[in-house]
Length: 630
Image (cartoon, helix red, strand yellow):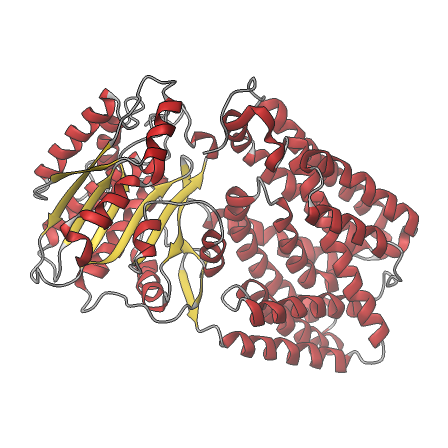
């Protein structure tokens, strides 16, 4: 059983490493050394700010503003209140929120303060968060955590300064309505033209690691600053070029949307764990994860310190590829390096194919690639099925509107666990080989698996295409179970075709394919070279080690992906199955283990569906209400 032991050992080690890397740092207490950021001290502000919901126009909103003005005064920021105009759209939304209790409200109140630097003419660094909340939520996370993190970071920086340049603190109003506070500052305030770098703090949940999910255009110098922070921040940093690309193409907006449109460099950070607390009455100080606050604040402090002491602030140059490795270091390289990684992968596959030339034919390679394509389509269907069992999708939210949307957010942990279990079972079943199951039964299984997703998503084009393609591929020629080498090279061939397409079309996103592919290609080449000399166990060990490390990185990346977009785009999880499958294909278990492993695979898939369905019962849908997701 050497292959099965290597396979399970690699995946188990990857999962353990990923879970460890996803942990937040320990929250420092209020009596921590004064030169350190301490979540315990920041929590003192949160307990004052997030006593109750304080949306724009309410008495609680005015009380929070007065408290923050006093805190900024204590910190030597000489604050001022900037009065701006609330847009008609925002005013109408506020009226709907309050059921008409607040009608015709037309003002925003930003709080602006400055920690002076040595060169008052130099471009300034801006720390920004919003102090208003959504209706009905105390907002301990969104965005009292950002506000409190800034106040605690300023306390540390004030003791260290003065720095080379000014630090501007902007606590915006009306972010939850139409970003109108940020809009007022960057269109009217005298300091707007002096801002050289924005560090914006946000939250879409009540815990988890704080992720950097957005930069400005031409981000090479901004990312270089961010990479330097990795070794100086408690818990490291989390962020990658794919996340920034995805966010740029989403309809969402934060306060950084406004300065980014003006071409100002910036870093946008937020934590998105514990999604049940997003815009929820449960977002209280006691429910907030203090470790998430520690991670957010440590990053804000480190980034601000690096920017304030830099000779020059980041300029707009070119976009780069970047991603952190389990939070510890950030790898940064030009997009053109993707071609070198592609060449390395092709060289590794070419060497392995040459060594295995007696059994790896072009026909077998083609069948291996079709096997990988079939696996990808079925993985999309399985992810949609789990998501569909958890509740309706997209435009099918129906009349439940916003209440249903936030209920589905609370189900995200169930959806994530369900997709993970289902895809693990699916991968195991695919590694056992399709040849053992007649094509018509494969097609019937695909059709049955598609039912929950189709019911939940309706005529979703991506899902329907995947269903049709998977049913068609079920009748394609298959590899015999023992053809592991051809299967592995075929999977890798499909992977590199996708990597090539991304490198041509979206080079900053190709790393998600090319980094793992390079590791697996080296592992396959090592297996081809070492197995004849040292036997199967030792020969496959380098590939297994690579699979463990790559799996850890992929599991670590998958968590924020599912929390971020898995509710409406669950099919993205199929990419992770394809990637892990490419490294695992050569480690497919021995034929004599087919029966018990097939049973285990079926149990895992059913357990995944049960998790999705369990979310529906654990977080029941509220009665239909007016409105929709905001």
